[in-house]
Length: 154
Image (cartoon, rainbow, N blue to C red; front, side, top):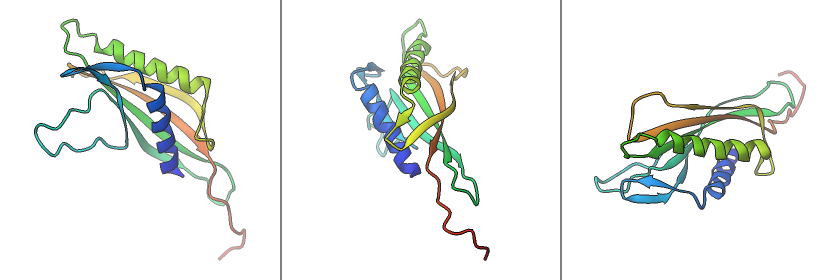
């Protein structure tokens, strides 16, 4: 169920950004979306993955002895490359964050089984990392929990 949530979010983001292009070291390219970890660069000349969105499952919560729904927390890490002298990569990160906000707040459902709950939280990384710029979107999702099989004690 948790992997299905993560996959549904990845697919929703791929559709959302299918036509968007951002800078990388070679020019402009489509933003890539990954789940949990970036692929490892096995060779020195492997392509760089930036720009990307990484969808990470961070934690979750279930209620014991209940048929209540479960909750899972996901963080979207956004990385944008901008080597221009005006250091405005944060503006592209904010644009990506805004597109995510507008999409997920307008339609908080995903994959037919998951619903965003609580608040959508976002932030910019305040570290000095240019030409790479980072931002984060944090979401909580409700989905069906584990159904109680029996109320009998062991």
